[in-house]
Length: 318
Image (cartoon, rainbow, N blue to C red; front, side, top):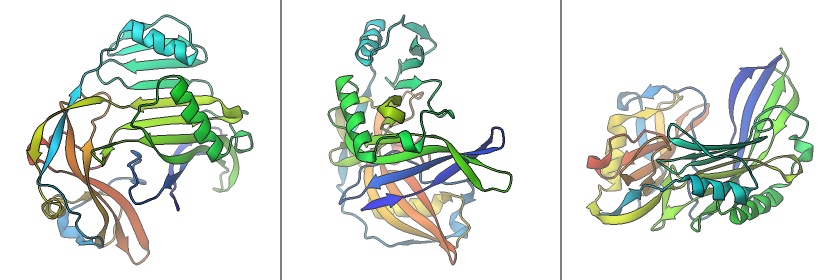
C-alpha cells in the first residue's frame, strides 16, 4: 500500500510559483520513520484545554528499560573529505569554514559538517531551480530512481549498512497564474529517502536522501547519520504515562478541531539536528494522529521524552 500526502509553500517568481512535495511512503507492519514532518501550513498552540484526546490504537507493550546510546563525534579531516569527493567524482581543494569542510567543483558543492558528520552534496544551478532539464517528462520512474540512488550511494560510500528504504517523493516548483490556475511545472525531481532503526526502533532525525533529476542525474544528497555506542540501560516511562504528558503539554498544530485522535504510538530514538552537539540518542515516544472536526483532519507527529531527565532540547515535532 502507498500513502500519499501533499505539502506546499509559496514564493514569488515572475508570477506565482509554488514549491510542492508529494511523498509516497512504503507501508508494512513497521514503517521506519522517513524524517518527514506531517505538519502542513502554519503552527498554532492547541493546549489540553482546547482538545479532547482519544487513542484509536492500543498502547504498545514496552520494556521498563532501554539502552541509552552515546553519540560518537566524527573525525572529519581534509583527507577524509578529499577521499569522499574523489569517490563522488569531484576535484578541488578542501577548505574549512566555521564548522564545515567545503569543496567546490562547478556545478557541484560538497559540505561536510565537522561536529555531526552531516554531508550535503548539491548541483547548485539545477537543484530546486526552474530549468529545462528537470521536468516530469525527463525523470526516471520511481523504481528506476530507487535503483539509481541506491547504486550511487553504495558506489560513493555514502550508503550506511543499516539504511532502510522508506519512501519516494516528487518535490516540484509549480507555476500558477494570477487566478490561481496551474500553468506549468518549472522543476521536479525524484527524492529517494532512507531511514534506520536501533534495536528495531525507529530513529527520528536520522536522514538520508538522494534526489534524481532529468536523465537520471544526481541533484542532491543529504546525509545525517551519527555513529553511536551503547552506554547503559535506563528506565523509561510507560506509553500511558507519555500519553498523559502529551495531554498535559498539548500540541503544536494548525488544526481547529475539538478532538485529537492518536493513530500511532511507538517507542524510538531521537537524533538531534546537524548543528547541535548532542550527547545521546534520546529515547522518545512518537505519537502520530489527527486533529479532527466535522470537515476533516490535520495530521500531526508529537515527540514525548521517554526518560524525563533527557528531554531538554527535544522539539515537539522534527
